[in-house]
Image 1 (spheres, rainbow, N blue to C red):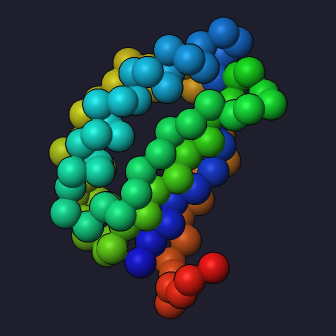
Image 2: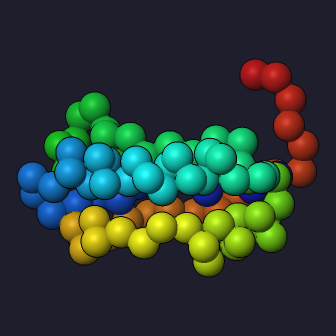
Image 3: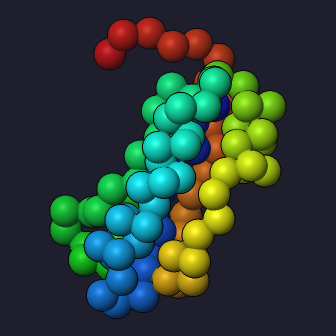
Length: 94
């Protein structure tokens, strides 16, 4: 199991457009085999930040999506980010 999570800092005033432009990629990822969840969400405190979260069954499925997923001009709004990939050994109820 893989988790991809973190934050993206966007050019001022571009957050809502970025989230809206991400909708196709989110829908495609959620429909892909091996994707358990995929979220691009506006941060409730910082008007220029989005938080990302993905959960994939395997690295191969994640990489297949990365290679075939939709491209987006919205990425030009990203100024910086801190997104990491985590390999999870086990999963249980919280």
